[in-house]
Length: 105
Image (cartoon, helix red, strand yellow):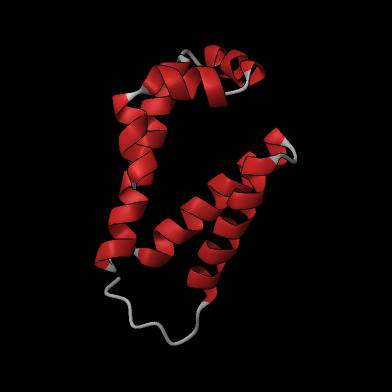
């Protein structure tokens, strides 16, 4: 959740430090810019965190987070941050496929 909040507070840092230049070109083709993407990503990360904390729609947000992390891993390549993302992906997949979870939704 903290990374999502930080993206809303410091979008230019996240845009300049973490969003690849080639991806900004892809965003431009869809009529959006990098700052809008960073804001949207921040809101998404906050929603995932709220879901995990509240226990509401955990499987749904685990699926979305897993898809997002997989797309990041495949598009960015191997570096020190991706190692963390691989661990997060494993955690979300575990939540998604954990049997016997009594979820509200």
